Image (cartoon, rainbow, N blue to C red):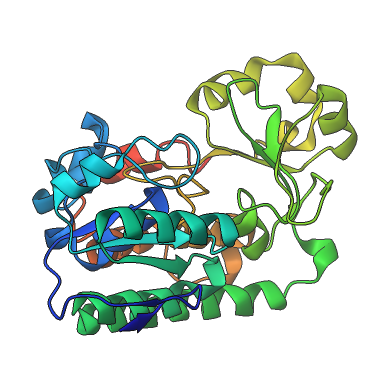
Length: 320
């Protein structure tokens, strides 16, 4: 009997060999812990992503998602996949509790909800590692997670707020979608010490479509984007040239392979994004370069050794 993050008591098998992720954040969590137990991907990896994944997981089928926006799996498909347990990693609010209870009731398959807050990452690794019978690996990853967070938090705490960079997260080809302060989309930007210029309109933030006038009024000194098209065109876009970020050549493209480094999905993949951003913001306060940290992270968490060409392709645009 396991008590999940929502306080639900769920009976699970003594031995678990097949696991299904309910959504994208859970798929990352389960992949880093036990790729050999995954029944499939929420979304089948694209060709460009394959070399950044362990061979054992590259050709798994697509099984769809049960939770979040755009759910694509149904009860029949879940039962056909025959998982020993279903795990979701993210919010544990009443909506997700209701979904978990309903799917578990309809399928008879244990369904666990795991708190996906970034600060809870190490705890989540240990809990799920125990459920899956991979405690040693979970402990290794949890300790490395704690080391990363401790290092970043220590550096950020040593920098006065007025000396921290003012960041704008540009999403979509036009760059005018962004996350307000406190949103899950900008969480690691703020954790890495960046001051998000997009003022929150509501508690917890969220995505918003902005005007160019608003961005110019905020005048960020650094722009981070998740969109390659925006990155390729912003240097010749007249309105953007008026920002300090363009004047100082401080525009950076977030890596996205095999998972986004900012928020796609909001899971353990953000740990390497946190390391990258903190080094961008405060380059003189860290030992080691991002190339070395990236290779180390991918080896430990994703169980893949990056070639020089893989690393170059991954970090293209991440330096300026």
